[in-house]
View 1: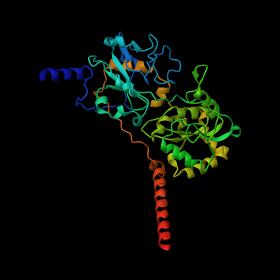
View 2: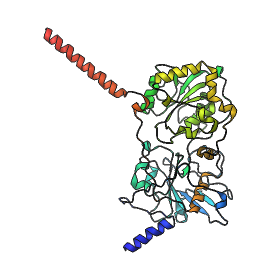
View 3: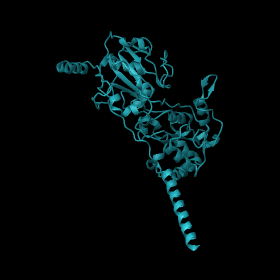
View 4: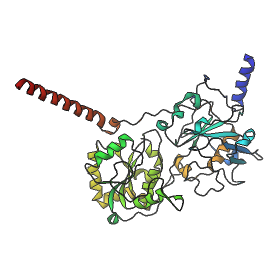
Length: 415
């Protein structure tokens, strides 16, 4: 029996088939995630004809909803989760993407979304096709990413991370459309946050002490006029469309990510860059990898300033100096420059659709026997030069109690 088990594991490793564990298994993930520089190469000449067809089944839902497989590649890189494998003949490896679970026996691979409740809907254990994990939210809000029992069962990662097997961030290529002229901007700083992560909210609150910030979101809201996050017109979500229009009239936009995890960037950065509202960025220190070519000088990093007050002083200077401000928008006239030898550039202008790349990788048989755990500590106040307001409040409260006690004792002694 031991010989059979050992042989099975050797064969699954040799054939690129995953070793499945039931809950409680002891196999730990192998640290084999490819780096941003060495992730799988996908060249058409590597696939001699004919190739058998690969069927990828998106097994789970996304946010509890069944996956709508796209039939066209129009804007497929703009709308996560990018459910597109290419038209017939477009992919060097015949490739099909489906969400039909009844075809499990045909599957070449299964894809599962990493967030609850989808992560609990795993493929049947008897199907030995590889498992692919997909996520576009960071580990602070995705516990599966540091759960060894879950990560050990997956063989490929599709993620916002530029060092994942299939980099797919929610960050399209910024548009070169010219911005509204400097003197026609109606406001200085725009903020739109629907989720009030405490550190970024506190930073914005302190920044407001030194400079006007127009907040249209749920956090520290002081402006009306923007449709809600899930607002609809003619049964279509239009929040981002309205946000893009509003953003064009502001010189700056607060682009504060919800955490500082490695490589975590979302479309807030795209919105600000595209509209010509200079991003004031708080987030991963790997942000430069998302700013290739002439974009490298297009943002203002909060990390470059010791305090909200110091940042506010710099923003006031730029608000009154069109020449200095204009340097952040030079890329709009110069163009993006040389971006296509970078990971993000290849994402913006892919040679093959995302799920075609998956089929090509499956044809090569390059899999991991488990994924690396992805840990990320929640953002802390001190990381951004702030005092914890809860501690300050507690200390003030303690001093008030102490002062009241002293007054009471003095009155008691005098009387």
